[in-house]
Image (cartoon, rainbow, N blue to C red; front, side):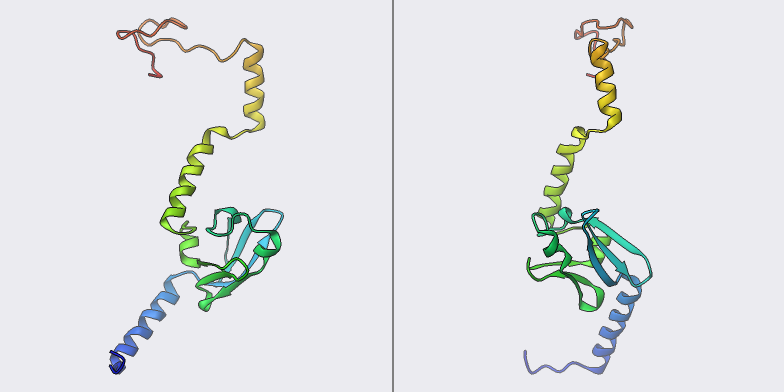
Length: 161
């Protein structure tokens, strides 16, 4: 196995695959941590920037701002590295919205799903206060009778059921 030679044709094919990947995949030319926004900002070779919340990157949650600021671009712009955290993240997967392993992404999806209904906004808080002053959330009319607050029975179900 160690004595096998690689042909010139195989070398040229590998170089061509590398050139094609360089042309098609995003490459980082710089990266930094934006403390005010709590985001990692990646400058790409095509002149654009990409940013993501640091807590979404696998291995970055719980890191200090100083640790996050120590990001390096490696592998010809293909990866970001945080030495103190022993974390490497690929640039192309990050741009595609993949922030870690499949297990990490599954956990992120679960967290986002759990927190979806808990979002508090000024408009939501204002509506809740107004509804509270009016005696609570308005009752829904039933589909069959149009009556407000009519009991839902097996023959008269509400739209919400």
